[in-house]
Length: 145
Image (spheres, rainbow, N blue to C red):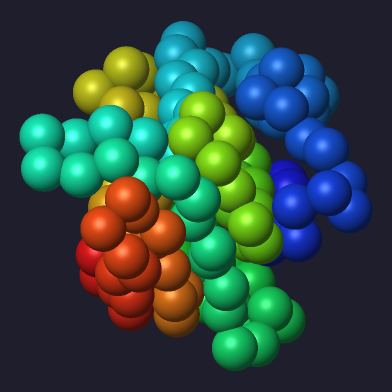
């Protein structure tokens, strides 16, 4: 299981790396579903164009520990065999990779539910500060945005 918060540019992990890692779990033979998610920086919305986004956390180690807690809670709740989650922090431009998650479970319903839950909980529960630099200025969004 890999659960990481990584400063952009220090290490590059791709979704295929996480997929292969999840498949090394000896219990993979009990799985019937693997779902993955790649979150990227959105540049265009109806009312704004984001030129750059800065994502930070006050304490990487603490945030990573909280991410571990979220993943373990979701694994127990949904009976998931294996999960791998990576969230990048740093300076990003539209289209840049920001968040990766892979979930392997026995059946598609609980596996898909676990993936959806990790996506939402990471967004709303981890202590991130997001600064969106747009054509009209900078918007600061604390965790939950």
